[in-house]
Image 1 (cartoon, one colour):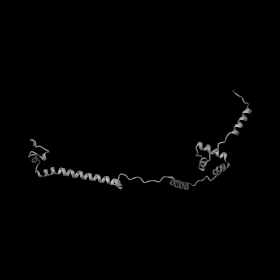
Image 2 (cartoon, one colour; image 1 turned 90 degrees about the vertical axis):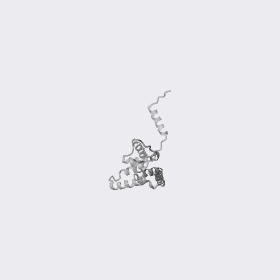
Image 3 (cartoon, helix red, strand yellow; image 1 turned 60 degrees about the vertical axis):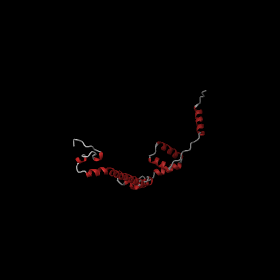
Image 4 (cartoon, one colour; image 1 turned 30 degrees about the vertical axis):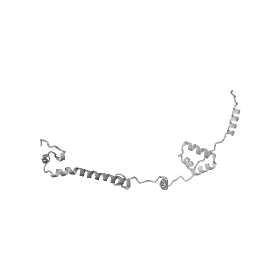
Length: 167
């Protein structure tokens, strides 16, 4: 079923709907949002929200007009100092870089010292074992006077080598 309305009835219906409509509360605007809007640095969403709040609140409008009519000249030296102080308050604490590349840089930890001690002990044990095992052959080589005399007996170098006829 289609009902046709006259323009007067349409306008009356529209006015009745507007009167019955629930008005949405306008989100509060912070001073930083207002300052960004005044400076022209607000995005589209923030601009729409601030403009709606300024249109609805005459006190906020007065604050915005007062801020816009303030001094336009800025002391750049003072603002640079203020920016440095602000960054120092907000910035995280800077930690010194870890030293690397030095030979003894890892000696601060007791575990690292223990690792190096175990490596040194292993080297001493390996060298000592090598001398102990090879000491017998070394003593035999030192007692012989020439290389050919090593091959004169049947055993030769403790049985490691056998004499050949070419020598």
